[in-house]
Image (cartoon, one colour):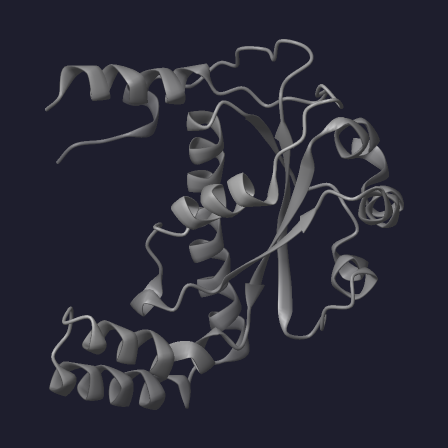
Length: 211
């Protein structure tokens, strides 16, 4: 393993803090935010359906609409470069044909494998209860959210995941279909204006077991 790369990644992991106050003068361009999101979406997902959807809220108008829905995190909303609302798309399987066909076009998957995979996915979907689909979304969007925080750190930005907001209203507040898009979390992102606190982690011998 490349020692420099290993050291850099360790610093990304150990240096990450949950930040609640950002430098409001720091902005993230659409181009860089696009790059950050693109790198985050390299995270794994169930049968590669990539159910995550991102709403990047960085305009004064957008933040004003979000503020009353995240009133206990007002400082983060106001001072961050952006708040990214992470959703899971209940219709993510609608993109299966596009995803698998592109894999075939790029030579990453034989056509016969694609057809077999799609047939299996469609038959599975036919009997999959909505609650199970929702649980899958939460797992997959959790994976991409953690990766997004690490990618942001690699770009020199700080983040904080927010679960305390009005999830029942956030989709509709921005014109999204609340029945289709499942709210997962908000992620504030920007440059820290104050140092975050270190936090204790339980020792591995308390949380892991070998057999």
